[in-house]
Length: 440
Ligand code: PLP
Image (cartoon, rainbow, N blue to C red; front, side, top):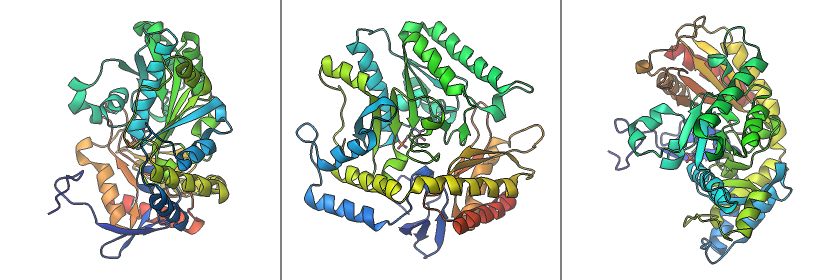
């Protein structure tokens, strides 16, 4: 019996012993195709020698340097690579060890920014229902994943509130034009600003493509500019959480590049280090950093392992590989192939209500009845059944149950590494098809 407090305390997970390319092998030598990058993490596949070498060289040379005393070459070069050309005006990076830590840092940077510019009354954050921003208490309080929030509700902070997401399949009314739906959502955000007191809101926070909670939900064209306009009208920041959908997963390095806005603060994590090391980051606009520089002269936040040299060296190698191997072009090409394959295999499936996503980031939402879009009874845990059948068929896809408010059903995410080849994409669709047929 394992001594680890595993996610499931009733059933130990498979023992993974090695990984190469898209394959993860268990102790029995059986290969599983990693068709979800874990949870959209393994962006360049497993076992890339270039990253292994970067990690070992960094560990040999300098394994750790506390940021009160030192910076290190790997962190400096990684920051230069990410924000040296100031994408969308983002000029500085702050490195942490996970997506949740990145979200916490983003909230605190936004709060401190308003203190520095003499607006101490701004401390509220508006996020969206059916969102996920992490599991630490600040990030959990911010997020709209009701299942994850529910047990901890009494100990979550009261400065967070939620508006509707842009979720056409579930929430656009019949006959409602796209532009009217976007306007309805902008009006709802405006009303929430008014309800809270516009000058008390520090930021609106959203995932450009909603990840695990609702399953690869892209926004309608014009949605993000409309949300940005509401924030600008009231002097609040726009924080975009690209922990899951960022760093190339959507086909561009940042998902916001396809949305007609750029964030004031952005979080990134999973695709940053590709799973080779735990690392996340926030990227921030020059004017925000300048306010802190000219004000108290410090970001009043910190972690022992921030900007860890080995983690930064791994992420630097991963980011160079994405650029040097032209992987974004492959994400777009393989994304089209994956979309076509999913449409062909599941387009008429009685229990697949929606196929949605972008780049190499796709989800299937399962329904009991297609016409009415009625979800399965959550007690059936259909997503788990599909995951188990898929693992038995040798393919890993990421499962997620329906939301507690009943506004979205069970779904699975397909997010293979950016290195995936056509035969691998086809095999993923084939095996997933067999697993879905067996489970439902
Ligand atoms: N934000 C988003 C959009 C995520 O998908 C996640 C994790 O799935 C997080 C934040 C939290 O990241 P982590 O699990 O690394 O703490």
